[in-house]
Image 1 (spheres, one colour):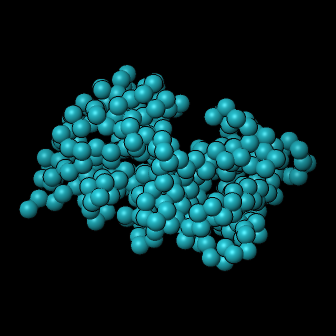
Image 2 (cartoon, helix red, strand yellow):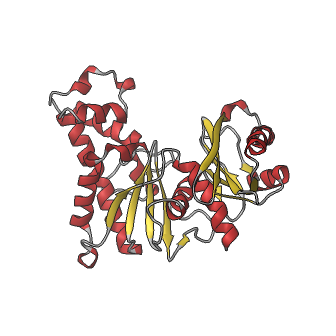
Image 3 (cartoon, one colour):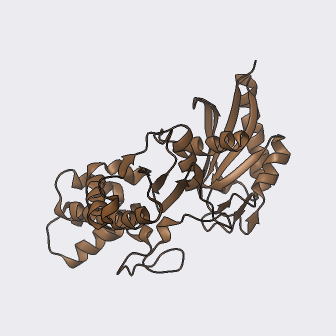
Length: 317
């Protein structure tokens, strides 16, 4: 009997990663395609089919479904809707295109929601019914699970924790508003915080030797490890803003745990300690000491695991 597998696809502005993954979470093959190489989504789907079919033939497995994590992926409509960081504009019927090309069911959701499903099926949230996944990359994404079900809202777009407003925040966000959490708690936010501190303070810092355009969250982390005061303060401010936001989120849904994923989460104690402290300090007393902040246990290519897991959850419903 052939092993059944799902195809997980993570669509990003630069690259599209994919993985062929079995129900136990074993990635049997993976690869990537450059997003900008395709003028239309139809061109991409055709090329993806040729690439994936070669891998499936070598593995001798049965593909049962396709899961997609994408910016502005709408679960209800099966579409990608006006994604700012994709060259394909407007509403893209991605599920329809994939189903027609591959001949198997396809499902789509936003990339952070897919990450939450991956954590539930393959990761540290196994057995949990109420939890949140926060993805910390260039921006801040989130997936909220309540009573074992992902929260989509009436239009499929619910759960945008990154676009909740920070008290007193005035930074412009790519969404067009000011003060969104992701302008503080993200790789971009950490850079902005560090640069503001460099401009406002005379504190010595190794970051002053780096041109503004070359400062990144990774470089802030690197000098923080050496005790750099500006870098440490940047991470403290990041953790403070994230912790306060999570305290508000806890008051609404009372999750068992909050998982942090993404490159920024690799900052470890520089971020986790302050975030946990600020969440506890600002939380309603009935929730104190109940909520764990955990690092994701998924592999570095967590996005394709999440997209793959979407297939298993949908087919089992």
